[in-house]
Amino acid sequence: MKVDGNRFRRARFAQFLALVGRIERVREQPLRIIDIGGTRSYWDSLGELWHGENLDITIVNLGSAVRDDSMFHERPGNACDLSEYGDNSFDLVHSNSVIEHVGHWAEMKAMAREVRRIAPHYYLQTPNFWFPLEPHFRTLFWAQYPESWRAAMLMRKRRGFRGPAASLDEAMASLQDVNLLTARQLQALFPDAAITRERVFGLTKSIIASR
Image (cartoon, rainbow, N blue to C red):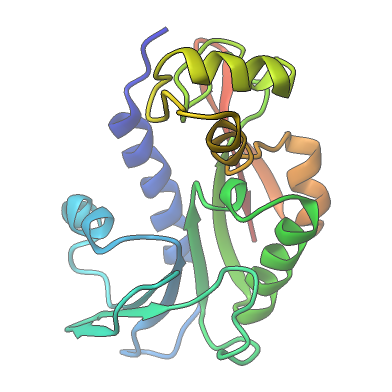
């Protein structure tokens, strides 16, 4: 199963821009966006889609250096604790394929709480647990195998972007760095969100929570 990730990324970004266009703002004031776990290269690669929009973009990542460049502001920060930002400090949160990396349910709840707190609007995407091709390990039905099987498989050979793991400890750390969600779980984390599905071959590839 071959999936054109760039095509889906552009389609998702078009949906995000549609949300940008619906948000009311003070005339001539930039829309304040915080991108949790994003990168400057992501925005640059999609520049032709948002060129001309009046945006002010803060990009937050663990261990990031502080950089300011025109409308971009890169800052260190933890998706599960953004207490340096007050309630509604931004107009819109953007987050792409991040929540599945923050930890388990408690950490996901913490990130969801921060997303809903720091802005009245958000757009958050994550891969679907039930899609046959797991996007990190690039193996069919990977997420559905027992963890012990996956650890042994990862120790045997490279899987997608991970491995081969040199030890069981390394394999387990790699496996538990990724915790995919179902649509039902995403709705539980974001009860005030509309949940939409990104489909390929009739199957749900990614799930998106937006408000």
